[in-house]
Picture 1 (cartoon, rainbow, N blue to C red):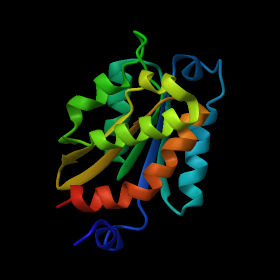
Picture 2: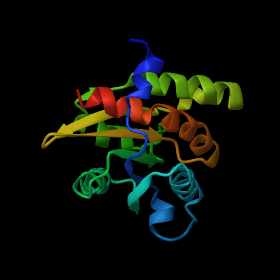
Picture 3: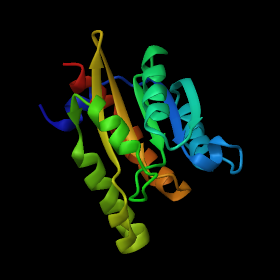
Length: 171
Protein backbone atom coordinates (compact mmCIF):
# COMPACT_ATOMS: atom_id res chain seq x y z
CA UNK A 1 0.00 0.00 0.00
CA UNK A 2 1.43 3.40 -1.02
CA UNK A 3 1.63 6.59 0.99
CA UNK A 4 -1.51 8.04 -0.59
CA UNK A 5 -3.52 4.93 0.34
CA UNK A 6 -2.22 5.13 3.90
CA UNK A 7 -3.14 8.81 4.12
CA UNK A 8 -6.72 7.98 3.10
CA UNK A 9 -7.00 5.79 6.19
CA UNK A 10 -5.33 8.33 8.49
CA UNK A 11 -7.26 10.51 10.95
CA UNK A 12 -8.58 13.66 9.29
CA UNK A 13 -8.99 15.66 12.50
CA UNK A 14 -6.97 15.68 15.70
CA UNK A 15 -6.61 17.44 19.04
CA UNK A 16 -3.57 19.68 19.19
CA UNK A 17 -1.41 21.84 21.40
CA UNK A 18 0.88 24.72 20.49
CA UNK A 19 3.77 25.40 22.84
CA UNK A 20 5.86 28.50 22.23
CA UNK A 21 9.33 28.41 23.74
CA UNK A 22 10.60 31.95 24.26
CA UNK A 23 12.10 33.76 27.22
CA UNK A 24 10.90 37.17 25.98
CA UNK A 25 7.37 36.05 25.03
CA UNK A 26 6.99 34.18 28.33
CA UNK A 27 7.77 37.44 30.17
CA UNK A 28 5.29 39.38 28.02
CA UNK A 29 8.05 41.44 26.38
CA UNK A 30 7.30 40.17 22.87
CA UNK A 31 4.11 39.10 21.11
CA UNK A 32 3.95 35.44 20.12
CA UNK A 33 3.18 35.90 16.43
CA UNK A 34 4.40 32.45 15.38
CA UNK A 35 2.42 30.55 18.00
CA UNK A 36 -0.74 32.50 17.23
CA UNK A 37 -0.26 31.85 13.50
CA UNK A 38 0.09 28.11 14.15
CA UNK A 39 -3.08 28.14 16.28
CA UNK A 40 -5.03 29.92 13.56
CA UNK A 41 -3.88 27.56 10.82
CA UNK A 42 -4.60 24.41 12.80
CA UNK A 43 -8.03 25.66 13.86
CA UNK A 44 -8.80 26.82 10.32
CA UNK A 45 -8.07 23.26 9.17
CA UNK A 46 -10.72 22.01 11.62
CA UNK A 47 -8.50 20.62 14.36
CA UNK A 48 -9.36 21.04 18.05
CA UNK A 49 -7.11 23.04 20.36
CA UNK A 50 -6.57 21.57 23.82
CA UNK A 51 -3.64 23.73 24.93
CA UNK A 52 -1.76 26.88 24.02
CA UNK A 53 1.13 27.76 26.28
CA UNK A 54 4.14 30.08 26.21
CA UNK A 55 7.08 28.86 28.28
CA UNK A 56 10.64 30.10 28.85
CA UNK A 57 13.68 28.40 27.33
CA UNK A 58 13.98 26.03 30.30
CA UNK A 59 14.05 22.24 30.01
CA UNK A 60 11.61 21.53 32.83
CA UNK A 61 9.13 24.14 31.57
CA UNK A 62 9.22 22.62 28.08
CA UNK A 63 8.91 19.04 29.33
CA UNK A 64 6.10 20.08 31.68
CA UNK A 65 4.17 21.71 28.84
CA UNK A 66 4.53 18.61 26.61
CA UNK A 67 3.32 16.39 29.47
CA UNK A 68 0.41 18.77 30.11
CA UNK A 69 -0.53 18.59 26.42
CA UNK A 70 -0.54 14.79 26.60
CA UNK A 71 -2.65 14.84 29.77
CA UNK A 72 -5.17 17.16 28.07
CA UNK A 73 -5.55 14.69 25.19
CA UNK A 74 -3.40 16.31 22.51
CA UNK A 75 -2.60 14.02 19.62
CA UNK A 76 -0.32 16.56 17.94
CA UNK A 77 1.97 19.09 19.61
CA UNK A 78 3.71 21.85 17.70
CA UNK A 79 6.51 23.66 19.48
CA UNK A 80 7.75 26.99 18.20
CA UNK A 81 11.19 28.20 19.23
CA UNK A 82 14.32 26.88 20.88
CA UNK A 83 15.60 24.83 17.93
CA UNK A 84 18.66 26.92 17.10
CA UNK A 85 22.22 26.66 18.38
CA UNK A 86 22.29 29.37 21.06
CA UNK A 87 22.97 28.15 24.58
CA UNK A 88 19.34 28.89 25.59
CA UNK A 89 17.93 26.83 22.67
CA UNK A 90 16.98 23.65 24.53
CA UNK A 91 13.70 22.51 22.97
CA UNK A 92 15.29 19.57 21.16
CA UNK A 93 17.27 18.49 24.24
CA UNK A 94 14.04 18.66 26.24
CA UNK A 95 11.72 16.66 23.99
CA UNK A 96 14.04 14.20 22.24
CA UNK A 97 14.40 11.97 25.35
CA UNK A 98 10.59 11.65 25.41
CA UNK A 99 10.44 10.31 21.84
CA UNK A 100 9.80 6.64 21.24
CA UNK A 101 10.64 7.23 17.58
CA UNK A 102 12.25 10.28 16.01
CA UNK A 103 11.14 11.39 12.54
CA UNK A 104 14.39 12.85 11.24
CA UNK A 105 12.88 13.17 7.76
CA UNK A 106 10.65 15.98 9.02
CA UNK A 107 13.69 18.07 9.93
CA UNK A 108 15.42 17.17 6.67
CA UNK A 109 12.47 18.30 4.55
CA UNK A 110 11.97 21.38 6.72
CA UNK A 111 15.61 22.39 6.20
CA UNK A 112 15.34 21.78 2.45
CA UNK A 113 12.27 24.02 2.20
CA UNK A 114 13.93 26.60 4.45
CA UNK A 115 17.05 26.55 2.27
CA UNK A 116 14.86 27.34 -0.75
CA UNK A 117 13.41 30.31 1.15
CA UNK A 118 16.33 31.72 3.20
CA UNK A 119 19.46 30.10 1.81
CA UNK A 120 22.28 28.63 3.81
CA UNK A 121 21.02 30.04 7.13
CA UNK A 122 18.79 26.94 7.12
CA UNK A 123 21.72 24.94 8.54
CA UNK A 124 21.16 26.71 11.88
CA UNK A 125 17.90 24.90 12.67
CA UNK A 126 17.61 21.58 14.43
CA UNK A 127 13.88 21.22 13.67
CA UNK A 128 12.70 17.67 14.22
CA UNK A 129 9.65 15.58 15.04
CA UNK A 130 8.89 12.41 16.92
CA UNK A 131 6.21 10.30 18.50
CA UNK A 132 5.59 9.68 22.17
CA UNK A 133 3.68 6.57 23.23
CA UNK A 134 2.17 6.17 26.68
CA UNK A 135 -0.96 4.71 28.25
CA UNK A 136 -2.03 3.18 24.93
CA UNK A 137 -1.92 6.56 23.18
CA UNK A 138 0.35 8.12 20.60
CA UNK A 139 1.20 11.82 20.38
CA UNK A 140 3.20 13.37 17.54
CA UNK A 141 5.49 16.28 18.41
CA UNK A 142 6.79 18.69 15.75
CA UNK A 143 9.53 21.12 16.80
CA UNK A 144 9.84 24.28 14.70
CA UNK A 145 12.05 27.36 14.92
CA UNK A 146 10.38 30.42 16.43
CA UNK A 147 10.26 32.72 13.41
CA UNK A 148 6.99 33.44 11.61
CA UNK A 149 8.58 32.27 8.36
CA UNK A 150 9.46 28.94 9.98
CA UNK A 151 5.89 28.59 11.25
CA UNK A 152 4.55 29.20 7.74
CA UNK A 153 6.91 26.63 6.25
CA UNK A 154 6.42 24.06 8.98
CA UNK A 155 2.64 24.16 9.20
CA UNK A 156 2.35 23.02 5.56
CA UNK A 157 4.36 19.89 6.35
CA UNK A 158 2.49 19.28 9.58
CA UNK A 159 -0.96 19.62 8.05
CA UNK A 160 0.05 17.29 5.20
CA UNK A 161 1.56 14.56 7.37
CA UNK A 162 0.23 14.71 10.95
CA UNK A 163 -2.66 12.31 10.35
CA UNK A 164 -0.37 9.92 8.49
CA UNK A 165 2.14 10.05 11.38
CA UNK A 166 -0.64 9.37 13.89
CA UNK A 167 -1.91 6.40 11.88
CA UNK A 168 1.47 4.70 11.70
CA UNK A 169 2.60 5.81 15.13
CA UNK A 170 -0.44 4.15 16.66
CA UNK A 171 0.23 0.79 15.00
